[in-house]
Length: 226
Image (cartoon, rainbow, N blue to C red; front, side):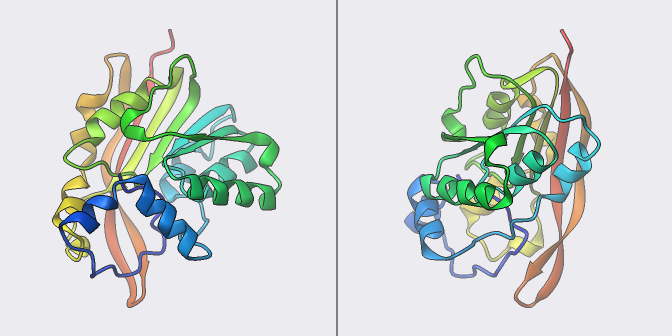
């Protein structure tokens, strides 16, 4: 499963189908990436999160596929009590360091878990988010179902990912198939959820060759207040 924040997208034309591409959906590959360079993502909060949560009263939040913790740190800075979840131990270690550096460590916790096997159990949150987390072979519908189970009554679910685009033709076929349109996730919503936003939104990516435009798929849904 590939996830995490793609504000600074550098060309990865070397990715091809086969074992190397498949490994990018697994924890070990992300541990290796995070161990290999100082900072992989920009550290800035994702714009769709800011748009959805910027005016909300702070409560409890869960960010699944949190990577280096940019969104966790931003939410904590807004007053949320946040749990950052990721399947990469290296990513979580970096996220914890970033939270310490930002002075919000007392508002955050960490959870190493694979979203494909994620089970909230008796935990629930007022806001559950996932940004640029992509499961192979259409698996994001099931991930959406698992994330929805963690939303408290009256709470919000925000799932953001890459929409299929010509800007990603350099990626392997398995990566392109993992991209989705927002409406494709709707079957993963339980009956007590009402969709609020189901659309694609244009976002500017910072590439080595200059800025390019791509589309985010954005699903925002609210759970009924039982």
